Image (cartoon, rainbow, N blue to C red; front, side, top):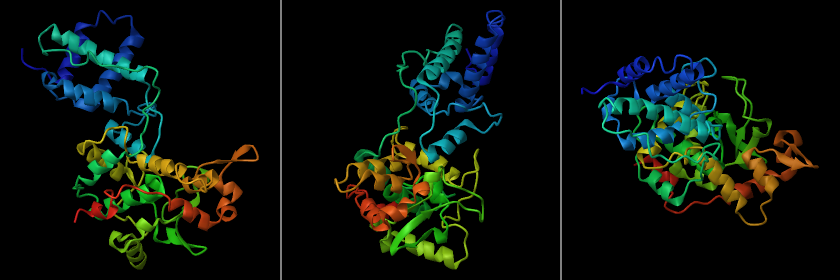
Length: 360
């Protein structure tokens, strides 16, 4: 039998099961939702006979990264764009493993229907394991192995310069800042505070209104010595941005995507980049923030948890209740020099040399 496209296969399934689902409106609706996801992942013109088992495994992993409320706000951004937008900003609530299993079950019924009609050779959606106790995708720190893979892959996306790629990754690895915080840095946001060079993460009114993710997100993060090296060129870039009258340090990034983020395009392309390098889905850009937090928590005993909270922009417990860094003005109470000592405890293996990210 001639191979059907996915669109043709779904149409034939609906026609052949119309009587079966005549009084099962909720089941039909669930089927519709699952088939829309399948179409977004595969494309309507994909020949179903050409969809292999390895593709099904990859698709299930991608399905696990779908935001819980995707498609419920009335906007029709492409699914991969939505996932990229959320992945760049960090931890977010994904659909449950039970929902993943249900979607795959719908796809399996579609394949079984066409297996009986010899339109496919086998049901590639059978035999997969699902841990229905899992409620969300667990994001991991960057392992040494995955850092090696990152260093061994050259950034080739022409829409974002290699220097922007290197600087954004370097800042994330040595500051724990969120992607959008990095992408919205202005020349005035790298400056000395009480004699210590810092990133100043704060609300913007110009050139575009923006505020950190939480009140605690407004903070000072001392610039790590690895970021100040001459051959990393970050401070030189900041100086040139100021001289040129540029609004942002990373002027090649523009607001885009479902949530109009400056980091959207970078997040989307970084996801493709790290996947092509063989880095798993549970290690993503936001994993640098996890890695910094882990390294700070495992630092020597003189580093106090309240200092780590101030660096990361987390709420911290004071007098038995949680308060934000901004509310309690911890930057001055702790002392910027203590924050500098804290951030300088962040270390990586020697093989992870951010100066090599330029690919020269």
